[in-house]
Image (cartoon, rainbow, N blue to C red; front, side, top):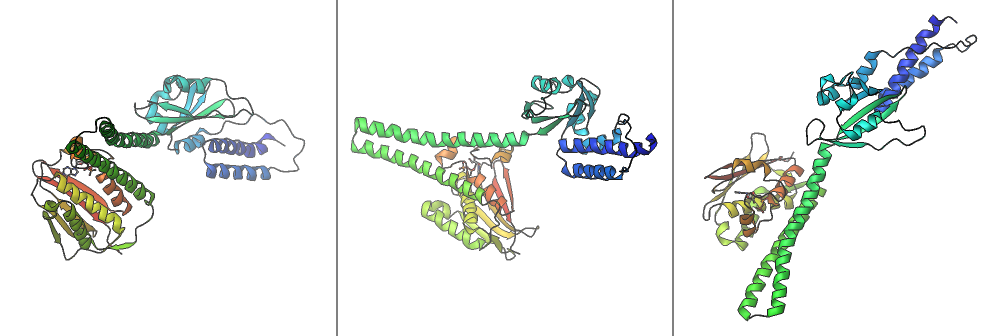
Length: 399
Ligand code: ADP
């Protein structure tokens, strides 16, 4: 058979094979399947009764456009490397490492000793397990974390794939910090309680001293109790994150309940609460206990941080978005703008000793944020220094 007849199926075969290999290596099953389908079709289109097989000419190079299209379409940075030289790099790789990397030495493109070794060292022998992904820090910007996987393709071509792991590391960091902060918050009152127990044991002391010590110990134990309750609330709210709340929530009666609860605790504060309910307040579907906790935390903060004796205004109405709107305003020295974006972080406090002295755990607003998120609502904190703070929560109206 003349070469010209075989050349077309063989050329298509080579392209499909290379793109299929690249697609498999890149984890693109759809492209791989399409290419393998094309491969099957091409194979069946080769005449079965071909005369005596002739040696095939070397497979033509796959058209550059096809491979470039595949790698360019991938969001992760990708580099093709041949004998230490970057032969191709997609847009994500060029944006990360510089436009100049194509046709340059890969060790200059990714300046990282472990990466250089992985990209230029010997390939794993046949049957040997592929190397674990490599963690790289500081490529692009200092704080970014990447995971590099090197695929060994035919013809000693290597394909380096970088996946951005910065978000995963940030979450891990938050988790580690949270455990450290929670332990620290619990250790301090525990140490105080232990210290007083030892003092009482050693010295005994007169009745007045004992009573004073016991009062301090009770205060510290209550602090631990509040903290444990808040930690448990947080984990319960997080566990329910994806289940939509379904109860009918009557906001005005909930506000009254919170006011009554505050009255039993701190008489003076309950009388500071001024409630205004608009006629157009829509009905809300939510988690009654969680909305009650949200009101408790926000009204409690206004009472704690507002100037003694000043009013705490709670208004309920319909927002322009159609959602039910709860606004809680206090009169206080306010919060400096740089703190506002961080207030909903766990254990973030503007003035830690003031918060502790007022019985704060540093978790109140983090709990509020999670409750609002679970209800698919919105939270907005605005504060004017010297005037006061206004917290607005919007909760979706019942449909
Ligand atoms: P805490 O238990 O410390 O009150 P929160 O999470 O409820 O914890 O609030 C975090 C911090 O935000 C508080 O420590 C306080 O510094 C600040 N804050 C919250 N609400 C107010 C408010 N209404 N006025 C002034 N500062 C506030």
